[in-house]
Image (cartoon, rainbow, N blue to C red; front, side, top):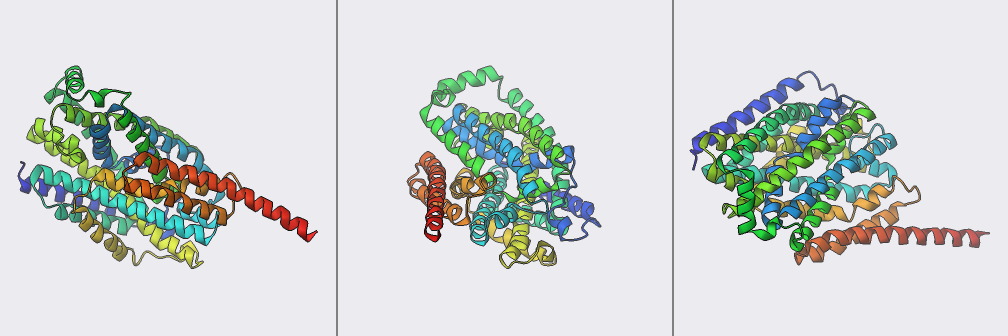
Length: 467
């Protein structure tokens, strides 16, 4: 085990560095609430691509794909990566369309209020808040697990230090600080991922021998036709696709894009880079099982690295994980603060610019403190994500179909969403994951079309009776 003093020093130094960078960059740039919450039309292709990558990937790339690989194998990893790729493609279509529909919005909930109304807004707001809080807890859990695994550091300490540091600079600089630190963090991530990739094949073995040993020890994980792996992969593919459409941090970045051309190009670049990275890290989970290191699937990749890497490279991996966590946590925290500040004003009918940033520091702490405490309990990172993803599956179709079908009413969309969400819960509790994610989508789609048909028929009968 590495000295806890060394890891604590690295932890505090990294957090202080990025906190200082975020505060320094934001100084004098926040002229009002729109600068703080949206950074509207300010990011070009390079800047936007970087912040999309950093925000989309996060530390989950080091945990959930390896955990998925350790549980379901190669078919799970590939389908999971396809889900992430599909998410980028969805944003390519939905992002510009939502932005055209509501040019001066800040989050997805602004679109929901205008398109549907207050009841649908309350549901979407509640689901997105729940998803982002769970995502935040999962990120803090992940880095706390790593620090405990390699140095025995209490999970609460790690989660609090990371959370408080991010809370300071996001409270000061808002979205601009988050996007600027993303730029630096992504540069570090690319370098460190390269070092880790080279280190694995140098210290663990050549790819051919690792694959051969994995096929011998865990043949089912190396088989594309593994039914269990395919079902689990389809579940994760649906989950990562539907849930991240409710991540308000991504919608903030949709509005931060300089123009529609920059937005589309940055999403295409992110798509080409993110999917291969996800497949690579997922494969490491399979390697860890095949080589006998994955006692705990949630830290499969780190078990492999901790068992085979020299001390210096283990520290490099910890820094990589820490930087990834901060890049995602600042996105989530800023999105949560924006949602509470801007979207709660929408419930009262107040305009966005009436929201101020004076109380944001206290709000950020109110979010971070309980999140860090829950993270210290060490729940499965993958399970936390799945729990949040479930609620989004029933809401996704009714919400976005309204962009293409003007006749879809709030009453029908709301009813279909609630029916969809409820339909998946019993199967999730019975651990029938694929059914629990597919059924809400099917139920909500069917309910939308049945509801629209009934409304059309009722309107026709009303016309006939009035004439």
